[in-house]
Length: 502
Image (cartoon, rainbow, N blue to C red; front, side, top):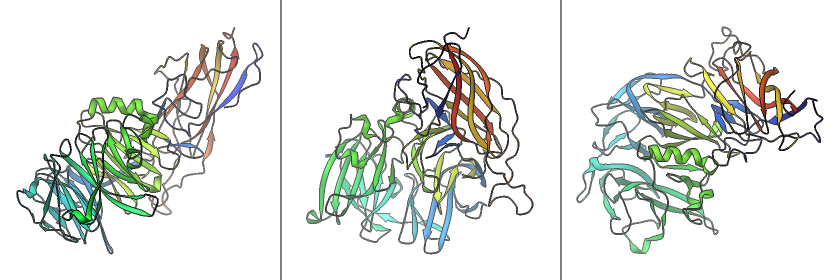
């Protein structure tokens, strides 16, 4: 932020505030948020040089019911996208849903690709497998096992492990087997709660890379093992037992770089921090900077299904799907390079799925393709910025804020609604825009060649607007409502005079 050396009475002072590339801050007192962060950052994505309106989404495949699981099958040259909806499993690779199997009890399948098959479990029906063309029963047996209760699979050192629903048991198969007789791991006398999920975690312990098998329980116990064969005491050892916050949702794990992330009531916690930090160290969570919003959501919806993390490498996004009541969701989104956060709204995502490096959204009546266009399937995207309260010079004295100019760029004209707050009181009203949206043109690689009008180059959209605000501190805010343009946000200019403006 550029600060003037001194302010002359009754002479207007102009300052420029940076774009909030530091992202959304929902942790600190509103008087302590730095200029490059924001009190509110909805439907903006903080990049490294600028902040842009989030990507849109477009309809990809029409379905019946609600897609609660998207499965990306990859084996040799076969790459298929499956949707689980309305008691069915459908192939939607072509953009048209083709039913592969039906009559299932629920649509929340948990899956992993192994040995040329997508192995699927939902905790209610007989396990299934997809081999690239058909869905069929996958027979797994075991002493005392009801196979329909198997729920969450993962592969560790060429061995399939699966959590059992509503028990403290996990099961595993012989090396390289996808079916057959499973062996039991019962943690009821060793850990609290029920089996939730498991994962492979690869870690550099100082002498090269090591693979660990991680078991997660409903009360927050994490059991970490090393070895190749759980049936052999000589080849299977407990590395450690750790306690984290209770996991939220039934899809609590995600891998980011070389780390394993866990969704908990305390935030999204990396395994690397679990081994070296106490649970009550809030800075261990990668969501620390948005901890206020996280705690509110966790308190209200910790027992609601739908929490999950989706990583979108091409967009540099880590997307946390957060239940928001009445079957709706918001997304807390981090730039995986800068670790800056924002909040996405009005995306009807029951689940997310990455397929061939592209991101898809499972919703009601449709599967959408994310990062497609600049609208919500034809409806506008409302992007809101709430700037920090800053005490400009003369420090501690009243200023009369007169003019505000958001520094934006887009291919066409955009409507900008502005507002200004003083002395830590946040309002919700806006001054109406002075122009309507125009331009935008076709989206590269989506519009029909030689038919669509191609989008023009980004041009400045920088108009001084009158504001009325008197106070010791001031905070700029604005919103854009667009469906034709992606908007880039570079900063905000302000003009004010010392005193009450008389």
